[in-house]
Image 1 (cartoon, each protein chain N blue to C red):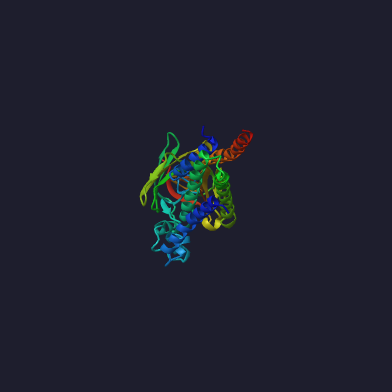
Image 2 (tube, rainbow over the protein chains, first blue to last red):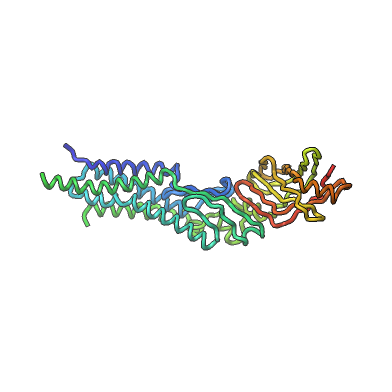
Length: 186
Length: 186
């Protein structure tokens, strides 16, 4: 009977699904006012809309593309591994793939927090990572008029899917140890 | 380094460098454009005439004119004054005026007459001019003041202060005082 690392199989499928899903749904969404400013971000796609105008950042788009390719590759490698967990190179395949979703989540959250801090300290605008604030525009931008903008932000369901994928991929690593222990006992 | 690891490493390097080299090649004549979008590069140099968000910046640079007083009418039975203001949306996008409030005081004596409020939200499409209807209900003290101090007058001048506006999720608090002349009292 073929030995399959079920965690790896599910993790691999989820990685591929996540890449596809993230092309259409962001991991994180921010809007200011009645969608006067909108930011939709994920490691694979980024959308900035300023007063109805979509801003295009080629370099970030490129990094998104590379991220999607790397993540997709990790998913494919995880899938291949899950059907070949007893091969001598299986640990190489697993080692290549299982940390990538976790790293993506950690780096993504780190970048969001970093961006919020940078915008806060440079421009003086309070940007929430999660939740909503009535942020006060700096007086230099408002000509003496007190301007408050309702800004809300939060993680969308694909982000939680990414977290679940990370956990399952770590599960695949743990299950690999169990498979190896069983094999050594046989 | 075994063969599997070598292949995975080469794949990763290829997936990262391939698109990067391609993008650099595409932008070889304008490497700045790879990092800063065309929309923003113009803005950074101070020339945004060719930028697609130049319209937005033009809008932002325009001085938003305060609403212009058009007319007012008084209902002596209910003790209600209805002010009509003209407001032009200077922006290239639609605005929704949700609320507008102002403290109203007698311009001569500074006596507080009540609070005027927008009684229905107003949608203003890009560049359009619309009427803002504000309603003021005179307080009992205000009616007494008008009777005692302005008993024979047909009109009264009033000051609108602490004007606050909620437009498309953006709250504005205006420091200026706004005088409305000849508000009918009969």
